Image: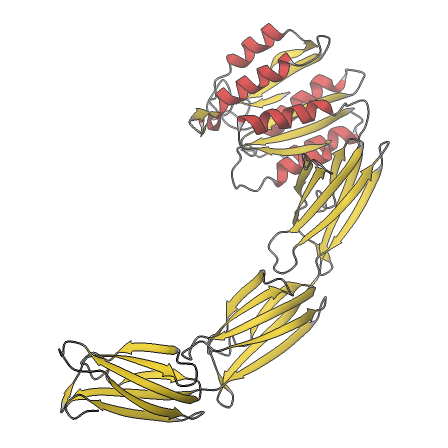
Length: 451
C-alpha cells in the first residue's frame, strides 16, 4: 500500500484532517484482513518539506502484524511534496521479487508534484513482467484533472475510485482489496468517440438491481485511457456513459451487461454531432434578437440555449449537438409580449447542418403624456384588445428622452391605459389604437383636456 503523507493531507473534510481520516480508515481496513495476509506500506512526504526524494518503505512486505502496522500509520505526519512516481516505483520494487501476484493500492489527495509520470512507471513495470494489479484512490482531490491517476490505475489493470469522505474512502479500499490479484477479473472496455476522434466521457458501472457502485472513471481524449478498461467481478452491470463538454443527448445507458469467467466486454459509444442553425428576423429581413431553447424532442428537457442577438456574427445562432431529435422554442427579446415560435421534431444528423429560420412581425407605438405644455410622469399599460392581457408597461417620467414612452409590439389592436403619477384625483386615460406591421404610431395623452 502507498499512502500520501504530503503537506496537503492536513486539509480537512467536514472539520477533520484528511490524514486523521486516512489513518483511521487504514487501520480499520487492516483489522479486517486475513491473519496470514502479507502487507507492506510505502509513504511519501512524511519526513521533510520540499524533498522529492522523501519516499520510504515504512513497513516492509511481510506477514501482517496489525499492532506494528497501526503504530506506523499513526506516526505518519504530513510535511512535504507528492513524489507519486518515485513511491510507485519503490512499491513495485518491493513486490517485484515476490514470485506471485500482488496488489498495490495508492491513496493520494493530489497529483504528482515532482515531475514524474506514474502512469508510465506502472506501464513499464507491467511490460517488464512484474505481476501486480494497481488500484488508485483519489482522496478529496477536488476539481483537478486526475488523468494521470486514472491512467496509472488503468495501466495497472485496476480500479480508480474517487473518495470525498471517510465512508467513501473505506468503501473504495474494501473494493480494491476484494479484487484478488491472482484471479484476473473480467473487464469492460468502453471506447468513446465523436466526429471521428476520441471523446472525453465519464463511465459509471453499477451492479444491476442494487445500483451499488462497481467501477468508473473518465476516458479523456487520450489513447492511454480511451478505451477505458474497468475491472469487474463476475456479475451483471448497468453502465452509463456521459460525454464531457458536449451538448445534446450526451448520456447513453446500457443495461444488463454480463461479465462471466474473466470475460472482456467491449462497448463503442459514438457521440458524433451536427449543427443546428436558427436564424431570426423581423419585418422583412432585419436581424432580430431572440432567445433560443433547444429541447429534447417530446420531453421538455433543455439540451442547449442561447441568443441570436441582432448581429450577423451570432444570427443565426448555431448549436453543435449530438445527433438526435430536438424541439426548438424561439422567443423574441425585442417585441413586447415575447411572441414565440416552435419547431418540433428536428433531426440533427452526424456531420450535418440543419437550418431553420423565423420572421417575427412588429410595429412601434409611442405614447406621450402631458398636461397642457408640461410633460407628465405616468404609468402606461398596453393591453391586447382581444385577450384583455397586458403585454407591456412602462413609465414616461418627465424627461424628453423617456416621454414619449416607446414600445415595440406585435401588429394588432390595443387599449392604452395611462395613469398619472403625482396628480391626485386624475382618472386614468384610455384609448384604442391599431398597430400595423412595420408601422409607427404616436399618441398624445393630455391630462389637461381629457386626453
